Every structure is written in structure tokens, then in C-alpha cells.
Length: 336
Length: 260
Image (cartoon, rainbow over all chains, first blue to last red; front, side, top):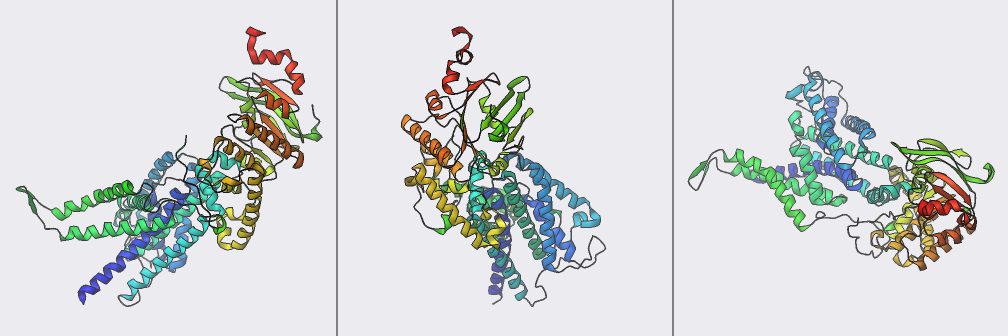
């Protein structure tokens, strides 16, 4: 019985965190998949969401800014607005940059955000981070608290998915595709290219903050190491590319799939013996070493997926005009 | 020269310098409402640069451009579109992944569905406008003779079909001035005649004013009156094709000093 309880709790945690990653991946899909914006600073917006929510919802604490005791929903809304405002300010300056330069700029900005959050000790408690972050539904008895929180995350994923899918099938989605196809022609057709890009950048960043807000609540702790680029930015990128860029379903699929692999391998490394001997050579600290192999494994998964599905498992498709079925010609090949 | 009242577009003292290179060096002309005006000149005369400045793709170094009496100098392309100035490109720039139909639909103005929020808040308004845009796009496809490739991604169309699609983009809005950059380049003679016929129809039935850059003198002669000749960044002369082709300076500009 205890064992089944353990499996159940694990499944709930898998779906909860997988759902958070799905929110992040949907945000990145909005930026990269739809608008072609290379955001390499996902971890920065994620951290802003977590910190702002934590500070606004926690009771007074001597070691960091707080004591606002705001309810969950308005605190998350403020966190998303803060991330949106930061994205807007960055976007106003950087959105005209070509994708590779935008990537460099966003890496830099995420790093600046991380250093601010790490060093402004009066607000964030510095390297020690913020603990005892209130979580939604934690007053419910175990395991209902975890189930309710999982349901909250999954319902959020569903709502975001439906909203983005609606947008993708609309004239807005058509303009986004048009801009990626030919910026000049989009301008000649009266579209304000910068404004469309800025929208996608701001909305996507707000979603990343939402993912961070949930993550901070879930772990009840958030510090500078919680937004490690390897486990946030890198993993979310792999999720989107493997699942299928410019496909909302692909983004969600990639998030849950990669998270299952990432989390599952963590358990497997825990099972490994402390020391093994290979061809007579003793290798100590196997579980510790194996933990680093997981990043390698994620890269390998991406390679394998892209060998088999060059555009991700669920590639980009164009929705029919007004939902009416048509027989489309073949996809255009690459042209100069 | 046309008076201000019947000028669709007036260009005064337009200059574009790239460092020491004077690509356009004080060009002044006006385009009469309802005309099909040709812009010709040898390579390097500054035609395309002038065109790009009118279309908002490049900012002039000096000078003034006004449209229907309004100063439009330096306005970006997408704003000019909404004022009724629509351009095409010499090398067609299509939305490769969108179908021919969607390429036209994407060029329609005033679409509430292009505002992401409207799709969530007022889906019925979005849908109603989308139906109108669809009807207009279908009509335009028929006019262009592209109905059979309606659902083909534009990246797979032939060069000529892409050229037609460029023209079609101007028909999705109530364009007042259409800037055509070499509509005849890379097009076979049959299609060229069809394009010329469409230009005449749009000029006559919809009252479009055209400004055309073209190297094909037969096309210019059959379509355009007046013709403005540019050379070395300035206006050399203007008039009917018959007049300018008799002008010794024009022949000189095209063939250079050796033949003159």
C-alpha cells in the first residue's frame, strides 16, 4: 500500500512539474515557434515570476522584502506584469535584432537579472534564497493538497493551450507566419512587424513568469540556483525543438516527454551502486557522476528525435481558413 | 508638370547619399492622379532608391514627399499601406508557407483578428470580417487567373504566378497609388501582356494610380503616359514615350558618351 502511495505521489509530482514546463514551453513557442524570436534568457523571466510571487504572498520575514500577504491570484498576476514590463523594455531595444543577436542579448539580460536577484540581499535574501513560500491548496490534507495543486497547474496548461491555439488559427497566427516568411512583404501588406514581434515576446515572457510562480510555490523554496540555465533555459529549448516548434501540441508533448526522461533518470541514478568496477578500474561516486550524464542524455534524446523527425515530433501545420478543410499542395522546399 | 490639386504624389528635391555616393541627387517630379506613370533610366540612375524612399523602405537624406497633399516623408511602409500606397517587389516576396489564398487574405487591411485579444474577446466579429476577406481574396484570385492554385503554398508557385500574387496584394486593399517594381522582369511575353491588361483594368475600373519602374521599353510605351527619365540621380526629362525617346539626352544617357 505504501509503495502504491509512493508511486501515486511520484506520478502527481511528474505531472505537476511537467505541467509547469509545458507552460514555459508554450511561452517559448509563442516567441520562437510563432514569432521567430530566439530567447535564450528563459531562466531570467522564470526567476522573476518566482521571486515576485514569493515576496508578495509570504508573511513578514526579517531576511528579505515581504509582508504583503497578497492572495495567490493577484500576486501571480503582478509577477506576470513585472515580467511583461521587463520584456517590453528589452523588446523595445532588441526586437529589431536578428535572431542570433537577440539570443546574445537575452543571455546577457538573464544573467544580469540573476546577479541582481543574487546580490540584492535586502529583497531576495541573496544566495540563501526565499524559503517557506506559500503554496496554493496547502491547507488541504495530504494527498489532496498535492492533487489540487496538480489540477491547478494542468487546468492552467489547458487554458493557455486553448487560448494560444485559438490565436494560432486566427488572422493573428497568419500574420505571424507571414512575418517569418518575408518581413518585407509583411510590411508591404501593412503589418507593423515590430509591434507583432513585441507582442509575442511580452506575452511569452509573462507565461515564463507564470511557470516560475508555480515552480516557487511547488518547491516552497526559490534561490539563485533554482533558475540554473541548464535545467530551465536549455531543457525548455530541447522540449520545444523535440516536441515540435510552432505547434502548441508539440510544445506540450515535448515538455511532458522530456520531463519524464529527465525526472526518471534522476531516480535511476539513485539506484546505481556507490562504486562499480569496469575492466578492473574502480569508479567511485557513481551516482554523483551519473547525474552529470543526464544532461548528456537529454542532448542525445534531441539528436535521436531530430534524426527521425527533423521538424520535431509534431511539426508545424497551417490551420485551414475559417476551419474549412482544403487539400493543400506539398510544402514548399527551401528557396534562396 | 501637374498642379498640386491633381497630383497624387509629389516629390521635391529628394536626395539620398550613401557616404560620398549620391544615388539620388535632388529629384523633383509629380505623379498625376489616375495616371500610369513610368519611371525609366539606365542602371544606376537612382530609380529603385527613389522608389524605396517613396515606399518608406529607406529614409531620404533630404527632400520632401507628399501624397494627396499630405507630407509622408519618412513614414514606414506599413503606415503608407494604410494611406493607400502599396508596393510590389522586383523579385517577388511571397509568404512561402501560406497558400495563394492566404497570401491575399494576409494583405487585407482592418482585420480585427490580427489583434490577438479580439480572437478571445470578440470571436464573432473576427469571423464576420474573415468571411469578407475570404470573399475578396477568392474574387482577386479569379481576376488574376490563379483560382486553380488557391490552396498551393506560395513557395511552390511559378515565378510568373508569384508575380501575379504581388499584383493581387494591391487589390486586397483600396489602394490609391500602386508602385510596381519591374512587373515585367523575368516574365514570358504572354504573361507580360496579361499583366499589362490587368494594370489597365485596375487603372480604368478601380481608379488606381500607377508608378512603374521597368526596363522593357515596349511595356512602358504601351502602358505609360507620362514617362519620367532619371539619370545620375536626377530627372533628365519627362513627357510621353514618343517625346522622350526622341530626346537626344535620353539616348545619350542610355548608351553613354561613346555612341553619342
